[in-house]
Length: 440
Image (cartoon, rainbow, N blue to C red; front, side, top):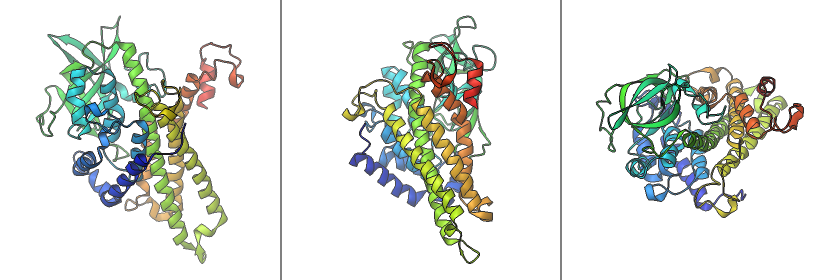
């Protein structure tokens, strides 16, 4: 692995940082989250047109920049610094990779160029809010993670030449505004139930088409602690859909694609958390150097210095883990850099571990930022609460941290090969007692 970034990667970071510094301050963030979409649509179109942000990890054949997870992670780190409310994670890190991996050539040609150009946004819709399990980050995704064919999930049935979906999904990222929904639904009846992915086109390639809505589809924006991550509840009542892949995909292929997407999304979200933590820590350091107590800046007290030094060490470790997770996720890409080593799937558990460390670091930094800012840190006018809420909600989105680590341990065989003193024979399944020990 070559840890040095290329000049192109540095340029992506510099350009995005300069633009967001001008257009996305704390006041702009607070104003954007109060709009109906929950983000600044004009800024999003600018990021797409000038920087190609939503198409960074898409192939050039579909209008993308032909980069990879590393470039996407670097971009997410910069958006995390500004706590940018946008559909970047939902579109570029979650939905687009699924369409690229499983979609037919017709579906790719119709959707991916429009996504890369910023004309369409997309998001995955998973029943019961189990997105982290669907992505194989907190548990295996080859079981009943979407309901097992029972009541409560989303059911798919054939009607004529197409499909119809019935059910509901909550906590869908940008679900109230996404133009394309990638919906996980059960088909085949209870006895032979399997989970497949379906496309619901809520709008056409040009913004505004389909504004009247899709018959049977109800989308309601939910109240969220972190307003910079708008979420929605979707209700589908015999909604027309098309199978992603047009019959070429089976349940096993869907599970593999979701797991690969999970590795990329975990690296992107980890980098975003690192960016948010970096800015929160920098602002806290600046504040303690200015705020005076007992006739001297509080930053001159050794106790405060030690707390900030510990946070800095944690932040640097989390950044290294996020970069490594992004590099690992891009190893199997066609045209990957020669320094990426042997091409193949991402290393098991790397994304989950990096995400766990980044989320833990952001939570610690945000909490210290609020405390060290004193009384002003608790107020709505100060930006410290933006980072604290982002830390709390990110762990709910793809966590929690202890389950991310437990899943990584399972994937690495930590408790099945006699490692760690569990006393289990090699190849034996992880027992309930072992799972509890990991969770602790």
